[in-house]
Amino acid sequence: MNTPANTAPTSLGAQAIPSAAFSMTRPFYWSVQRELWENRSIYIAPLAAAAVFLIGFLISAIHLPRQMRTLSAPALHQTIMTPYDFVAGLLMLTAMAVGLFYCLDALNGERRDRSILFWKSLPVSDATAVLAKASIPFVVLPLITFAVTVAAQWIMLLLSSAVLLGNGLSAGTLWTQVHLIPMSLMLLYHLITVHVLWHAPFYGWLLLISAWARRAAFLWAVLPIIAIAFVEKIAFNTSHFATFLGDRLGGGAEAMTMPGSMPIDPGVHITLGRYLSSPGLWIGLAFTALCLAAAVQLRRQRGPL
Picture (cartoon, rainbow, N blue to C red):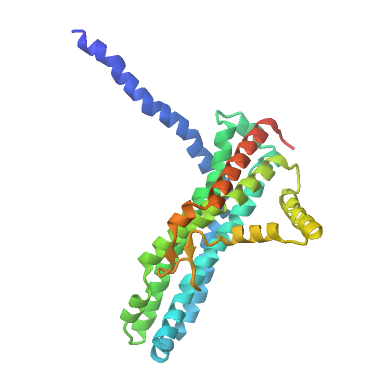
């Protein structure tokens, strides 16, 4: 008769663990939802860029049948692949621009419009709020970029096939030239290694400035970098700092070798071991962690502007 009474606390304890985990993750989930709701450019900008490109691609596809008849094999491959590389590059640049401007306004904006008073009244910690904002450039934007790019490339392939079939040509040659699955895997690898991990210090720095600056966050983020570069040039007649920033922003060559090819080209050689053993990767991630920790402290101390 005592067995049910003895087992009841155990079952309740077992249920308390997932319940506690859910209560810890729910504020973060809704904080991310809030960012997506308040900053619709996060997904509207990539979709708009893809739509504009697809309109241009549809117009240019009129010339595809003639190119299939007249161009040699190497020139045909280059002609076919160029739009697929271009749309990937366009969407990655769009995501970078959205991420940079989002980070600059993420913490400064809520202080400027005084909405921070409302959000601080909710049971959401400053660490959760900052990490939710950091998840936009680190997680959400790369995933949106990947999904929109892959969808756009599939639409391009189907449109091209329809144009060729409508002109009495076979689409088989086109499908043998375009390898969308390997290209998608390379795109995902490039987004993770370069646009997330390698560019993380830029996003961390911008979030820190957004939490610290009272106004003109863009100037406060850029002027110290320009000042350091100018002082180095005047004092030592060198440009190591500017070169370092340029290489960092350009993605470096640690994740892959790019012998004149786009980083999403399936023929590009991946150098994952060299990338993971690169000191620059781990130093950048450590710098990013410090910036985010400082941003949490600043959000805890700073009030509305």
